[in-house]
Image (cartoon, rainbow, N blue to C red; front, side, top):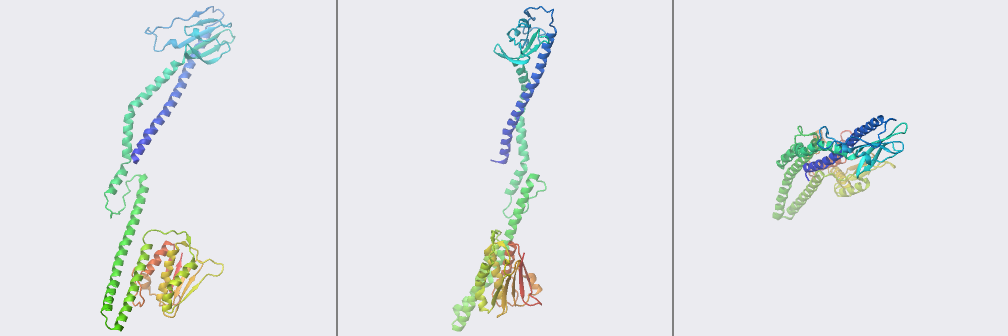
Amino acid sequence: MSLQRRLLLYLLVCAPLVWGVALYLSISRARHEVNEMFDTGLIRLAREVQSTLGPSYTGMNARLPPEPREGDAGAGEADVRDLAIAVWDRDGKRMLADREGIQLQHLPQASGFVEETVDGHIWRVYYLQSVDGQWLVAAGQRAYERDEMVYGLTVTQVVPWLLVLPVLLAVMTWAVRSALSPVRQLTVQLRARDAADLKPVPDALAPVELRPLLGAMNGLFARIEELLVRERRFTADAAHELRTPLAVLRAQWDVVRRSANPGEREEAEQKFSTGLDRMGRLVTQMLSLSRVESGAKPAMQAEIDWPAIVEQVMSDCLPLAERRHIELACEWPPHGQHPMPLLGDEHLMTVLLRNLVDNAVRYAPRGSTVTLRIGPEQLELENEGPPLSPEQLVRLGERFYRPDGQSEIGSGLGVSIVRRIAQLHGLEPVFGSIAEGRGVKVLLRF
């Protein structure tokens, strides 16, 4: 159901309910006021009648003058047949009564208002005892007269509202449609957009209620655009970097096929194998970078188990270290201190540490030592390789960037992967020298 229909439904259901409650309260209040007015009249009538009574009054079974007939001049709008008066003496003998008053009950002990049924109709009767107990006066009025006035007053108020109701509904419908017109305009604007159009939606003239929604949409557009830019850049870089090793592999394969000399063929096969290794490493690194930059945040709920990660990384890098005669060393914090407490994704942290150790082993001098030091609040990795120049430190982390003069194969993606995974875990890698301008040191800290 649309928001417009829902609002109209709420209004069409709630408005009559509120109207009904207001009508009930209006009738109750009108009835109270009418009863108060007529009760005051009955009290005044009873007192006036009693004031005319005295010791000299001898009217036995006297009757009041006949009530005016319908249509008589001076009869007015009120029907006097709805009123009654009766007087009794101390002995309960009726001394005065009109036609309706004859049917009133004699209640010697009554005082005040009493509801009675007279000739099948409900009457409200006021009984007034004289001070000396000589006379009992009763003045009554049929309840229908009061209800008629209440309903008459109510109808005069309700009928105009009923007549205006269609106009009110039409105005409410127009008001709801006008209030929701910015939503319809936003819908039309978004439908007309091209899939590549991720410009922010202007919200300067939008209603206050729509601005949080537009802000969230613009934030989503910005994140999508950033993700698309990363994917396009990654695709372009990957295509550019894969072109060279593929061409080299094809050339080396041609040499392998055409080599007649066993020594030349063996050398070509070794180069071809090295090229395949470089291609495999490049693809692996690209897949890792694609995963960490996909925009999907991994669950950062598991506590990092550093001993298990270090064991896995050392095992993975051991063949390369043995080939280059590099000694791998690991130092843990003193007894009783926990190694760098961290919540995150163990697989990603394994990839991060593997890239750091692999680079340290790959670019360390042969026969040297690579030391991994895990402290209570940071992680350090050192090798004895040549220090990095300021220019290299500035460009470190660029995709596919590798300094000149490297003898080991690589893709130039390792530091980019390290920086991205560290960012996801709230960490910062800092590259520098060990001391006195020698060696390379990587510090991973919060």
